[in-house]
Length: 398
Image 1 (cartoon, rainbow, N blue to C red):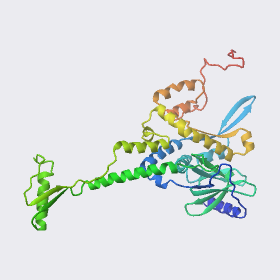
Image 2 (cartoon, one colour; image 1 turned 30 degrees about the vertical axis):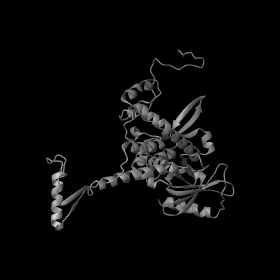
Image 3 (cartoon, one colour; image 1 turned 120 degrees about the vertical axis):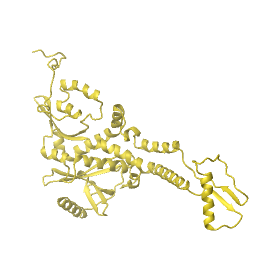
Image 4 (spheres, rainbow, N blue to C red; image 1 turned 180 degrees about the horizontal axis):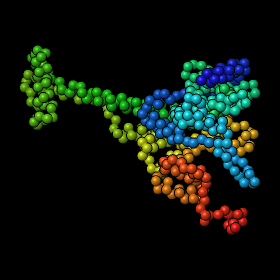
């Protein structure tokens, strides 16, 4: 952590010597991002939606791919550089990639923005990735109109980083040219409804134990006699286990009046509708958050919610971790769900045909079944009755 602090201090000191300006872009309404989500995360419904997405996002597999042309044919190398491989497995000494992805997804869902800081060595190669716990962020521009992020952290300290050292993921990217807008405006009134509804239910439960009958005696009685008579009235006429026929009889010495509390209790339909609106805002449903969705429903959720974030993360990692020259040489980051854990057993067994045709490695198929890898399982297989097709569309028969 000492190296990280020294880097932050050095960047902060360098940035102080430069002049920055505020540039209003074409569609920019404000140039600030403020974290809002702590109160929303206290809601059980919001937390369930955020957690369902974060759990799936944390299972993504990130790999370094190098695409080359050898003898006129495309060749792919997986994790050819050890420093990139270790960076994608262990972003920093304090966390693994799955935990970094989980926290990123949580922050992205709540505030519409998530930031990573890239630590580089003296040669400019990325060595560590850190999540930036920003409470607010501002876009600044140096004298060359280069974008610089200014972050205010939870401890009140301010740091500035060049955009090439910041991986920025956005959600609800509509109102601002730099920052995502989040779900604050749409979510706040729904949370107020939920909070008011819960308070009404709690109040109704508490008021259910208040006084329901008032006995007025025409003559003065001692306090102990009042308590004795009230208890006798309750035991005789309010106890459902006795043989009362539902009719109370009192003499002229006492006047019994029933008190009906006037408490509004929302019905289940109103509560479910508000909850449904929150789920729709996060593009999810009850089956997703309770892990009861079938294979098709899981795939639909993945395509609609997780897949767009995969594309964004892939593009950001590729353009921030590699130079233009490296990208021109075929280097890029591949992000995807390389497991079939959500698929049914029938679907997993059907993928055996892909193993026979070399479209899937044997160990990849075994991983989907929860089995350990075997020696030689990383070599593609092909059935003997399948051969390559030449350019003319005819099979090569040799």
